[in-house]
Amino acid sequence: MEFDFNVNPLLADIITKLDNRLMPSRNGQGRNGALQLRQQLYEVLDKMGEASARAQGLRGAITSGRKMELSDHKLYIMKDPEGSSGRGAVIGFLKTGKKKLFVYDYNGHHHEMEPLCVLDFYVHESRQRMGCGKRLFEYMLKCENVVPCHLAIDRPSIKFSSFLRKHYNLKKQIPQTNNFVVYDGFLDQPDAGRRRNGNRAYTSYPFNGSER
Ligand code: ACO
Image (cartoon, rainbow, N blue to C red):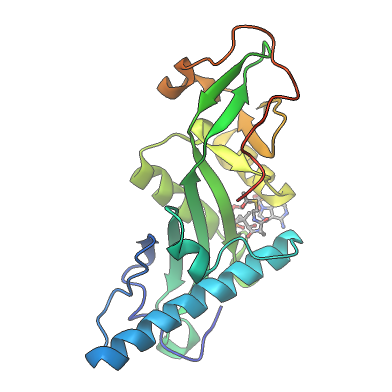
């Protein structure tokens, strides 16, 4: 995605990790310069968030500058520094965060967990199926020190499900009653030890799985 400003001073690396401080990688000159860079970073996140929502057929964006600022989510954003005649183009992003979830095992027991979740993932249409998504995903796995089967995925699209199957052989899902999809192996992580209820699960048990 192209912008009418240079994105290179905002994003330090090919893939940059952002948190709720939303700091542009370079300081602008003076107070106004710093403010301008911050506004530009907000615009990048707002536009990319809207594009992701459109691509997923969602009514509203689940990623924006403001939403990032108010959360403890992490956002990995990828750029092409040479794009847009040297002003840099934004290729895509991947957003993660921890959520408290009740996760069912194959026996219907539920486990109270706070796993790392993939909350939003988007690669610009002009760059899809070129390996950019894989590069972003791999970078996130390394930074978060997590293996793919230990992630909970918030409503994966058909393209994302295909991506997980192709690159990480994630096929077999453990049925859940919330919006999150988890795959075989998910409950092998240490956090899964905290089983909440030894009995078979009640399908009406409350869960925290509807907000992204
Ligand atoms: N149709 C089906 N599968 C696709 C498609 C597509 N149009 N595009 C990518 N994939 C899957 C396939 O498995 C593909 O392998 P193949 O080309 O051999 O079939 C594989 O992804 C390609 O891998 P990458 O090139 O590394 O992935 P890409 O850069 O395309 O990024 C992503 C994948 C992020 C899912 C991208 O396709 C995208 O932005 N899609 C639209 C938005 C979306 O659906 N995001 C996920 C929402 S769910 C969530 O965020 C929790």
